[in-house]
Image (cartoon, rainbow, N blue to C red):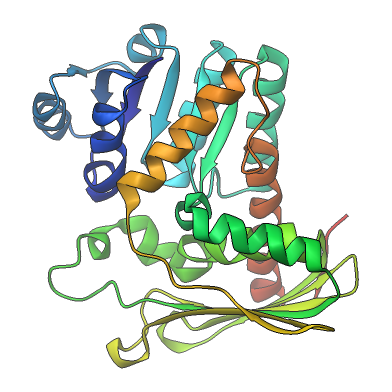
Length: 298
């Protein structure tokens, strides 16, 4: 499958580009970036071509991979879907439910496959946990704490303007929701508060009866950094296992999932529909923070 990469930031360097270049079933065609010099440099590392025009790269490939801010990604994804190209998007696929739904609609109409890259959800240990927890059932509560401290010297993600503006809700929140949603079921109500140091707390009611809580930040004090998650229910406590940080391996699995779906196989559980559901929940949380009210999700 011929791939074009959109984006030249740290995530493109750490995950997308090396995984695309190493994958046996991928022809890594080209790179487009908002900074032409960075696109030239990244493309040169992998014998790909730098592109100055978005639509030119879309036209030359079968699929796109995107490592760009969600609002920038959404517009490119929509153009690619309408052009009949498969989509491998980063989380979250957009900042608004409307934009995410527009991508789903365009991909459905063009009959193209889509996958959203929720990093650790593509690691086998987490997939096995999710499947076992879903089969066990009887969960009453889910808790996820995901606190990072990215605005430290030497952390490349701390230079990201959209992370500074949107914080942990939109950066690490998608990972938390993507972990709980397939186990606890659809979310019907969301209440959220945000405090100092980007400390964001989200309370979610699930249609099947469970309640889940998220504690999120990308600006926590360094001593508070943690990633903990667990489910609580009739069978006791199930702690989400730690997994090694292997973004290239995880992205390779996302590529596998997209190629399988594009070739008529099973759609990924982390498809565009799932990505849009995550966006709807996060948008509801953002609305709750702004309004001070619980937000109902239809």
